[in-house]
Image (tube, rainbow, N blue to C red; front, side, top):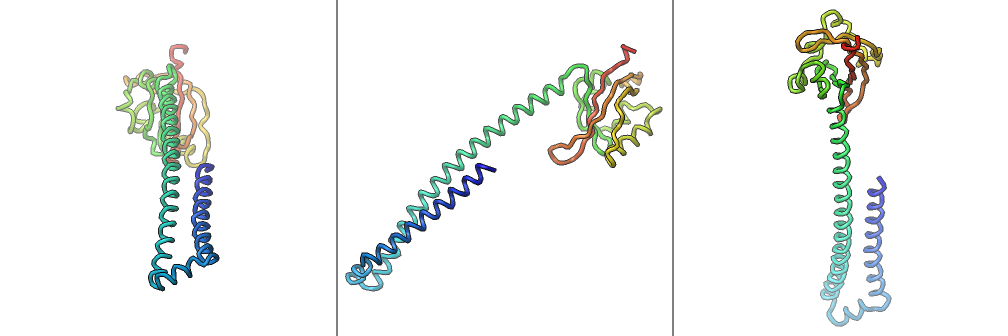
Length: 210
């Protein structure tokens, strides 16, 4: 990602700056004979100690500056991610609301085991089953009549296993009260956020038109 790459470049640049400062200090001590002057005043032990203190001081200041910059950049990145996530959630909720409340088009989804994973409001109105009662149940136990039960199950399995699409067209479904509904239907396979395929069905009730 661009933001991540930029952060890595900045991190490398800061480390180079810190190392460069340490090298400049070390070279300055040698070129201007400062180290010899300190050595002549305090002796070898004190000279080593002072040299270490100088390096420690400079390194500490550099790390403080480096850490502060990284903290501010990460905080900014975090705010951007939170803001982006909130926007995505808003769009997702808006889309979910549209799909759930779309009038006249029943939309349900089933997993590989034929169990219902989604059931919108139009499904409740068309088939009579509330979402809480439909989700988790096998679709054939809800709305599939015995006359097409075996063919329907085989078609679902074929679609999952070998991508042989179910032809869209008219089909007979059952209402909760067991009356027959003439429905124009279409199946579509989609992958969810967990990488699992689900089969979506879109249906329009043609009974009254018939």
